[in-house]
Length: 165
Image: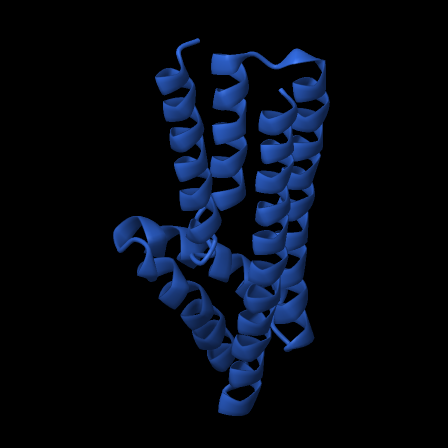
């Protein structure tokens, strides 16, 4: 493969991975999936090889683990704050709809607002609704740091693949 093409593939793959990594700032944005797709594309274009297959499996497991941790931490934060499962479900739906209607900020506003409004309607107490809201926000914050850290590790594993390949 000509050097200019190899360099272009590396640059494009890294750029897509960085978009995925910094897209993690938006809770509904599938940043880890974007990073994974970039690694998959790199493997398809350049060839996997034995090491590439092993490292791609590690990348895949990290993406799955990050996605599970993300959902668990947001839900756990909201539950710890007193949110009902119904409110958490409404937050997920509101977040997706909000992101579709007004990307990327719609989901950031709609999900916590959904939890707050539903819990306020349920308890008729500002303090309880606010606590559920803060629990969800705390879970989001913690899950961002976990997902971002996993995203960095995935990119480092990909660079190991590039350097060893």
